[in-house]
Length: 340
Image (cartoon, rainbow, N blue to C red; front, top):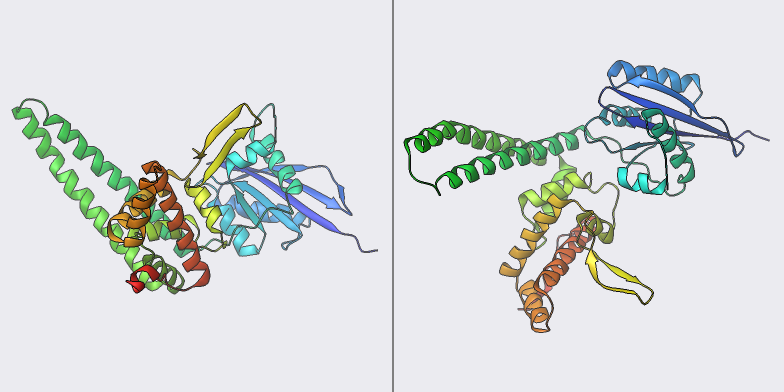
């Protein structure tokens, strides 16, 4: 009888190092977990590769590595797994934490062991994250940089506006003058980043195709389309409309229990707040410019529905249309407009 082996790897990643726990399952029998620490550098990744080879880890579907999404710190590992075809699941930290139940104690080694056991327990349900796309990562970094610069610009403008609410003084003119160059510099930086974003989209056919499809959806503009591409890794995982809407925080959930709790359906506070704000603006644009959504909003308001609830329903509709046009690879068709 041929011996069967499975390899489950949990990695707790920090800025300077990452702890790796390896569990080998031989003929459905779990072996003791082995743990090792590596530097979060190129040299550390090379040491990880030698260590995995030493323990005869297979770089195929019989293996599964799990890490938490750390933003930037896990990128070297993601790149390594993509290069060597090692299945990697980048999980949501909160989802992983809640799945572990009640836990006591915490350090990097223990966390890597918990991730390893999580990988073994949830292997049938966890999906491997798509390989790291350098072009996509550049686009995501540019969008993040633009968001930070825009926030800085708004912060400076708000500060100067608040100063104008007081009496006019010579000091106010000095402060305005000292901020003038900073404002101009930030505007130039934002413009430069936007040029790079447009260049990446134009030069990448896969991104450009989905970008053009997204723009056909009512209310979806340039930056919302780019942000959606960044959030979904260019829709590589084939998410459903409900999954993306839940991620954006626009899906209402039940809040009832027996006879004592009979709350209204409401959205969950756990969401991508930036995406939710963008969809909010898109919904307002759709109501203003597209009769389909204008009529829907007015009809629901006339029925006595809360305005924000109707607006959230429109945000949900936009997300469903976004997923539909991308998954079907066909532009959105406004049948209401054609009928008119």
